[in-house]
Image 1: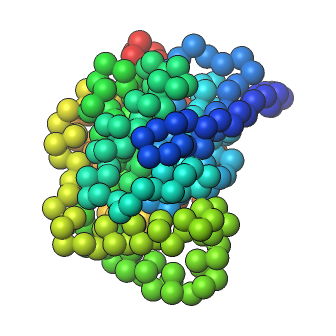
Image 2: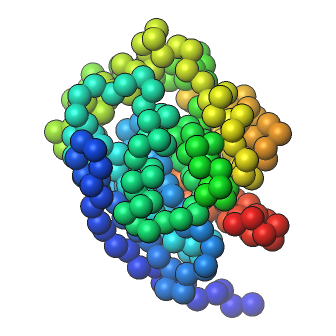
Amino acid sequence: MPDSPPVTINEQDTRIPVDGGSLFARIWTPEAPATHAPILLLHDSLGCVELWRSFPKALAAATGRRVIAYDRLGFGRSDPYPGRLPFDFVAREAQHVVPRVCEQLDVQDFIACGHSVGGGMAVETAARFPARCRALVTVAAQAFVEDRTLAGIRVAQRDFQDPAHRARLARYHGDKALWAVEAWIGTWLSPDFAHWSLNEALAGVRCPVLAVHGERDEYGSAEHPRRIAAGRGTACILPGAGHVPHREDERLLAGVISRFLRGVEADGVA
């Protein structure tokens, strides 16, 4: 049987005004998009739209849905963050920024999908907007502060002493790169952040859940996806994968998410 013809994906860049500045966003839309809820991507602690690479396009093609990603304040092409990152930044993103993004892009219902700490933001979003979040997908997300997570961050902290590492990050974040690194490392290694968890938010999640995690994730054990999915959905462990499965094997991850969403569609949820 011949392969299916490639799906044409249109890309659009835009800016979104929020409190404290403006955000850079990109939207991937299939030429004949499904009428289902779009997927909102939330990036990791050092991520941005460009660092999703080609995964959003692959995800839009695999699911037939519109995919939306944006740079948080302080990252990528968005404006600098106005001050120090607060310890409740994960919940704040869901409370203050996600609603503004949805309002500006005329998004009603959505799929919340996040990588690493963006997965935590997706959980907070699903809990805060149970009537609008049709499904939740986390990828390599942390549900609590684990020794393995802190050990991985300490390794990265040493690596960023190398100017070459900082220069590579600056290609994506410009003169905000140092702030991004310090915000990540300083927050997670602070004793004041040690008791952070998603327990309260998870108790409020009402939609179907897929928690994806790499078997070899250096920033968290399989306890994280198990806790996120417990009683709410499925924990999917990817054999041989590390912390960034959307760059390690984007087709595999897009397929896993697509199959999950097809099941959600079949149940009439999204």
